Length: 165
Image (cartoon, rainbow, N blue to C red):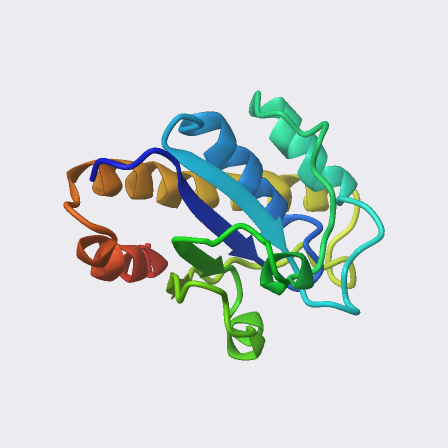
């Protein structure tokens, strides 16, 4: 698909780990073809990015310095960038999404959260690395599949099929 920067929004509850990792990964892997963003549910946004997620992002060689936690209202207001694709990273969040401007393609790629009630210390770091690896695998495939698609609608089924990896 020939496009000059497809906009992709990754959504998770707090916008502190999964969605930020996906944003950083896509920005790093295909900056000339994609513009990546992330957000979370208003009122549930973390104060700052998760320390373990930022460490995983940095260790992978992706830029983490400009990542910040933000609500989805940043992307639904007038003048916000219009997304081509919105990817929820958990099923619960996908049921609460607002109406996105421009009616983008949507998909849910369920990824486990970094659960601080059951994990601590090094286990959180390992979980962050596992999440980043799984996210990267899907993003690598998204990049490859988008290069072969003739239009965004051609990509629709592939985008949703990536949830099953």
